Length: 235
Image (cartoon, rainbow, N blue to C red; front, side, top):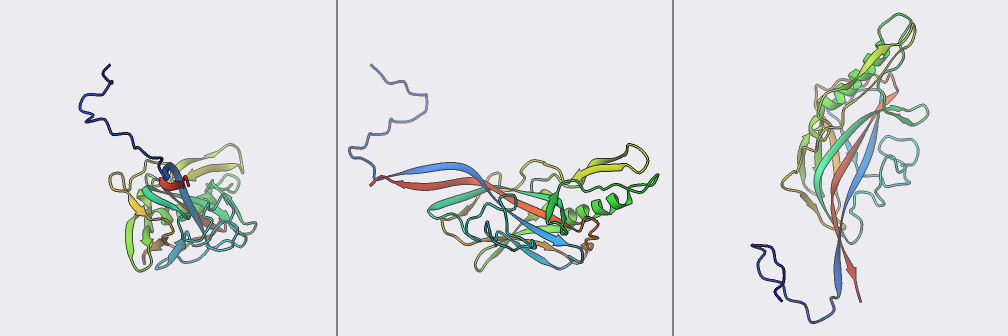
């Protein structure tokens, strides 16, 4: 009996004569981290992400980071025994209320009776300034490598949503920076070896507008999409 082999598949690999001592395990996961920016100037600043692990305080938040803000178990490090290849980077801009330390997706609030939702428009201006001026940068131990402007990091660029007036004093709406396709590293992933140290910087140039802080601030979550490879020892 002849084995069934696809055309062009090449020779059938030989069967090892001994039990393998380890196996490779592959999987697709995300690593993510969030930074909070309060009202005030952001021009010529640099914010470090992936620097605070789960359960610790940092990156602009007044309380410990939870699973909403990050899934890193160790600051700036790939999980032990895993190699990680990044094939995409995404950025999400959200409203942040520093008074109760809560994240809020909508960027528009209610306006005055019969008036345009000026509070909401100011909040959207914060959103647009972050998206249009932010730049992402890899920060390794002794090397920095530019990734892309924030508008290309899986968001599609711009501000999306709508504002409407349902009744007097009921101007409302919701806007965000979209959920577009993954634009970076489509052909050449970035390899992060196991136990490697890294961070992602969110930098702003001199023309970035100050955050008005109508919603008290802005939060930016950066997500790395990739594959991991770990070794399973068989003894």
